[in-house]
Picture (cartoon, rainbow, N blue to C red):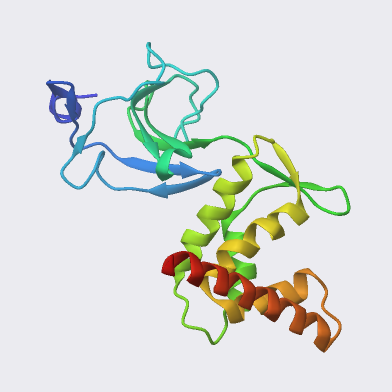
Length: 218
């Protein structure tokens, strides 16, 4: 590394804030490498390291996605996704390039056939999106619903949950979001096979609405 490049990549520290300039970077999420442009945010500044980052900055077996070297150093950590994940900024001690990883607690879903797969908000959104076709439900609302579902499941404290519990966790926030979409989703999830099944669910919806209205009036 020549003198100019070393000077360009040098960190300047002031009151716990690290200003980083010039180096290439990437974002590594779920094994996918995504270029991120200059290090840090668009001003080239990262926030101070949060609690929970390794004191010496090193982590075992985290390879650099550029040169595959194992000697990488954590230079910044911050809470992401409203506390559900931690984003760590790392620097390779071999090639000098920087990248980010996102770490979260593993939550597994056990399907009916016994196969286990990671919980996926996108999969929740996909299923609910079909029920919302033709309704005035935007992507932000779907993303919020998926977040609420994950939070409800994680609140149980279980590392593995059966897939039917995911469906149950979807029903309540979907009912609050759009009653028509809720009926569509419930009809598939609960295997409605008659008009009476729909009528029973509609009666339940009306009872819930009347109870909520009475509570607000009182």
